[in-house]
Length: 323
Ligand code: EPU
Image (cartoon, rainbow, N blue to C red; front, side, top):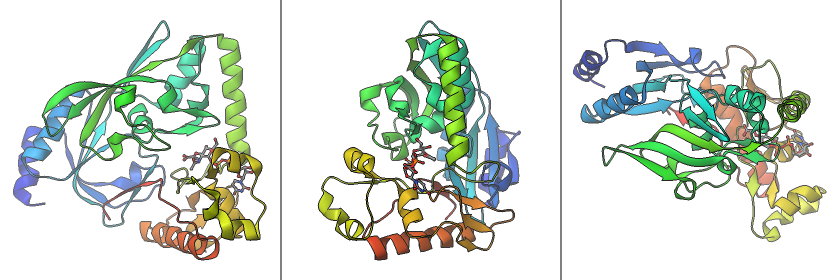
């Protein structure tokens, strides 16, 4: 980025900050500086910021909660634009949320309002925009089951438009928002009338399960890898030869990456201050002061071992920025 580009962007957005350490904005607590960092409070400002970056030919990254993000040690030579409108409203069975609304807060509030079907999201860190983009899910729930429509800014066409659920190309931890320049502005969810008491109890159980099976109180970006989806069991030949595959995984045609990593005895493996969590194999935690490079090296080591020993290629679930 040139100084002129930076000055032009800051002229349009005087609140934009320079050299903002991304370690302060990611749950992993890792990441060098963003050349420009801007938090915007409204959808109009989000559109304006993205359009300005595009006009000035500045690389940009629209950022939700930093919960599923690994930023390089060198940082990002562009503009990180944070969607900081956390508002949402519940009306009947419909929840309308700004992209920056916190997923866990929406889940808690929906449950308190007596709406069922979104309890699973109470332990999901980050924002609704991020959760829609990655089609987040856990314990049987997935964003795509609740989304009715998504209002976006289409960067190429320079227009605001609304996509229906079926236009979002939702798939396992995937959507078109991961591939196309569509900025999520607002999300409409449809839940079901239920009882607040039942939903709040369900949330309690979900959070308990999370506490029991996933690392707690440690810096992480959630699961590092997607679970391995297969169509045909012939790809599991090497794995079947060595381990007893749990029936549920065969039935769902998805092998848990954490389970695979665990079978290979990789839990606890450390590079620098990055460690494969002893609690769950699909989490790589920052023990304090880990570098992005440690995370990448450890993640590559895990992928290599799983490929060599089991013939399975793990795909990243975590988003990378600045590499
Ligand atoms: N398992 C092990 N060892 C491990 C990890 C898991 O044996 O180290 C076994 C478990 O005992 C269980 C099976 O593997 O029998 C599945 O484990 P788990 O229920 O933890 O689910 P997962 O498939 O590993 C997925 C999601 C999680 C989500 C959980 C709970 C992905 C990549 N991960 O994990 O999502 O919280 O289900 O529903 O889809 C995330 O996306 O960031 C994430 C953490």
